Length: 183
Image (cartoon, rainbow, N blue to C red):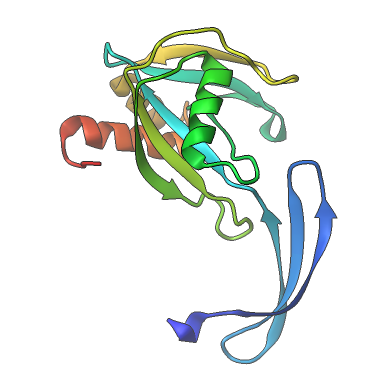
């Protein structure tokens, strides 16, 4: 594997926004040549797969400005600096949906944009949840609704769900439901 490794020679932060940063590094390729790599620095995020007691899944609809459309997604959010990912998952679920408590299990970590970002997303399964009042962040607007796993699978198949974290989460729920995969 070392024959594939790229080594950083130097680097600079070329943009520092409120949420994202852009890094440009000079790297040495395995053949000794040098080139540049630009990528987004991201603090990481959590994704919650909230399975309600009746077997339905709590979902969200949210407008995503870069693509100028409303997307169906699992509740999710950024991990704050120094925050434990499970604490972030519980916080995000409560803030966005009002649901709390229950049984939480780590599912997996995914990397959704490996060519241009260091972002990772930790997925958690949440069960045994209790409803409450949402506390959305200022400027955050979303709708919650429930759907069955079969409906979610159909929406993935039809292209109504295209968000990668949600597609992967739906597949995980289906595999867990069938018993093909265990946590």
